[in-house]
Every structure is written in C-alpha cells, then in structure tokens.
Amino acid sequence: METFFIVNPSAGSGRAMRAWRRLQELVGAPLAGRFTKGLGHASELAVEAAQEGYPLVVAVGGDGTANETVNGLMQLPPHRRPAFGQLPAGTGNDFARNVGLPRRVDQWARMLREPRLRSLDLGEVNGRFFLNATGVGFDAEVAYLADKMPTLIAGTFTYMVSLAVKLFTYRSQPMRIQVDDTRLEERCFLTAVGNLPHIGGGIRICPGARADDGLFEVVVVGDVSHLEVLRVLPRAFSGNHVTHPKVRVLAGRRVIIDSDAPLHLQADGEVFSGLPAHFEVHPAALQLLVPASAAASEPAPAALQDEAAPSLIQPASPDG
Image 1 (cartoon, rainbow, N blue to C red):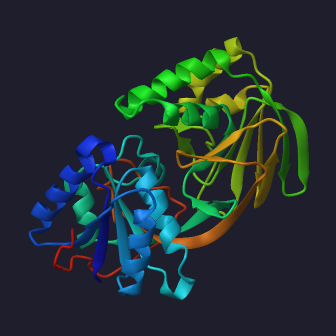
Image 2 (image 1 turned 90 degrees about the vertical axis):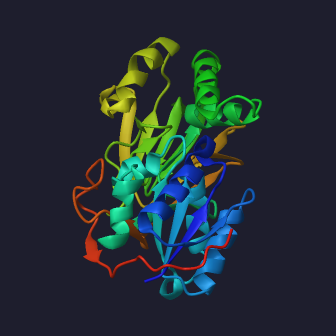
C-alpha cells in the first residue's frame, strides 16, 4: 500500500520539516510527498493524492494541517476516499493527543511497518469538517485575538497573551443552543461541541467525547464570573470542570448555536465568522492510521475499532 505525505514546512516552527527528514532516514528510502505552499493547499494535495490512487494520505504538521487534509479527503466519495494519518509536528497537537498517536518519529515509523486502521467519526460545522472540538464563546474569541496579533510573536506565546487578555475582558454572551430536541437559551461563557476531548494544546474541554459513538459531547459553560473562571480553568486540563454547577453536559447528533452577539467560531484552532453554526456528526467517516501496539506515547482510545492493514512502506520518488 503506497503512502502520500503532505508536509507543512512551517508547522511547529520547523518541527514538521525535521520530522519529515528523520522519517525518510528511518525508512531508508524516498517517500512520496509534497510541501504545502499556503492556506488550503493541503486540501488540494489530498484530493490530488486520492485521484492518483494513493490508499493512505498522511499529514505532517499540526492540527491545522490535519484539518485541511481531512477536508480535502472528504471531498471524495467514500469508495474513493483514502485512509488518513498524521505525523504530529505542530504546536498543540491535540488530535495526536486525542487518539494516542506517537510523537517520536521513530515510534511513529513503526506504524508503517505494523499498521492498523480504525474508524473515525468526523464533525461538520457549516460545511467544514473538524477532528477535535469546536467552540463558540471564550475559546473562539481567544483564538480570534491570537490570529490578529503580529506574526513575529511565537504561536504559543501569542495564545497565552490572548488568553490572559480575554480572561479579564470577555463577558458571557447570550446564546441559543439546540442539541437534537433539547433547547437552551441563556448567557454562556462558552459552548463546546466535541468529537474528541482536547483543544487548545491540552485542555480537556469535552472529556467524554469519543470519535466512535456517532455523537457529539456538548459542554455548556453558563454565566460565570471572572473569579469563577480563574478557579475552574485549571480543572479543564483534566476535564473536572464539568462538575461545576454552572456547567451542563449534553450529547447529540445535531447541534445548532446562535447568538445576537457578533461571536466567532473556532474549529480545530481555525477561526470563522458567522452564526448560526449548524453541527452534524458523520459516523465512521474516515479510516485512521493508528499504532498496532503500545508503541504510542499514549494509549489509543480502546473503543476505536481496529483492523490490520498491509505494510505501508512503499518507496516512491519524492515530489517537493
């Protein structure tokens, strides 16, 4: 089974390029791949790889590169859609954390020799697919502010500055939320819709989200004060924030979020404008390349059903 790699040379401040070179050294042969040249290019390359007949497409980069690659693959009908993999080399790497992908290149390379494919649900919001979790409210406004900051500032530092600013300036906003047949209308600090648990480089915002059950986990944080946020935020890294009395957890297949306030939406770290946001889950939309054993730095979620695949190491001429 041949594999095509989509490499984002700017991901992780050069980590993706180092990972790509190291992988080729470990395999000992050139691998088929292309470098992305800008926003949206990974999606185009994913479609091209599928049209060329590659059965597996791997994104080398962070969550943004993975998201673009998946959105490209989802343009193909299911019978022509390649399997998806990620060599995590970004800043936050939430998807890798969520599904237990190894971050060391030598461990990751074992997946090419002992591959397993597992079914993966995807979320869709307003026509765009996502892997992890999306949010309306505080987290999206932090991401929006970070995007507006000078590009000379390092990504993680930019996010932390934005987080600090919004902690003291953001106010809960009126939201109308529908999860299947359940309707809510209240002031909310944020509403997160999770296909998988983590966002923001390790925040376990939707701790019960699973990408194998055909459902979203929806976490609604009500009208909390700044002091309450400071107390609860550290608990979000473990997922214990959901025990707070102003946090509500729901599950459903379809979600709608709307507001009269000019709020943004973030999906896999990318920021979009325009509510209402319409969410739908797509069960088993992709086959995901995962570790065959405990070689991963973190165990893969047990409920992701796996199946053996033939060896994926097939040398090819590099392109890019």
